[in-house]
Amino acid sequence: MILASVLAALGAIVAVLGLLGLAERLPVNRFAGVRTAATLRDADTFRIGNRVAGLPIMVAGLVGVLGGVLAFGLPAGGLIAGIVAAVGMVAIASAGGMLGHKAALAVPEPEPELPAGCAGCACGTCGVKKLVKSDVPGVGGE
Image 1 (cartoon, rainbow, N blue to C red):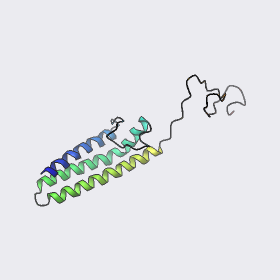
Image 2: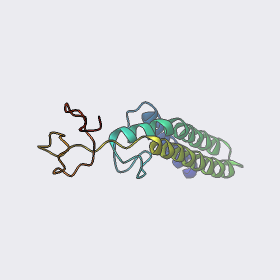
Image 3: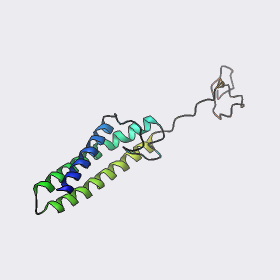
Image 4: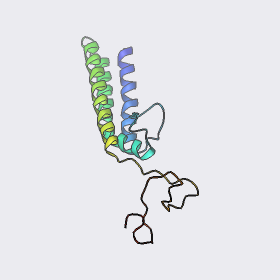
């Protein structure tokens, strides 16, 4: 009974998190979603990684809910159904997390911003090694 209730509740929470990630409504946070070095690079990368992982994570949550319902309804095989559903939920959620991580790795890194007060003149004093096009022919990559 307790296993069934806990599994169903955890499955519901995981399904909601997957739905939020799929709908791009999951904010950057410390506790929920795909949280790897790649996805935590910036807010857009977090959103993309969790959108890709959203469907598998939502399915993992539904597997947990279904396993909890089966464990509650089947007194003889309830423990086995609960254990199988819990293992399946973790495996599917882990696979979704890996997909989200790989999607975040595919997002190109944002270009560095110029320091305050730098006009992008490529004079070399601001420390940014970026060629900037200039109106002067032959300067800045022309």
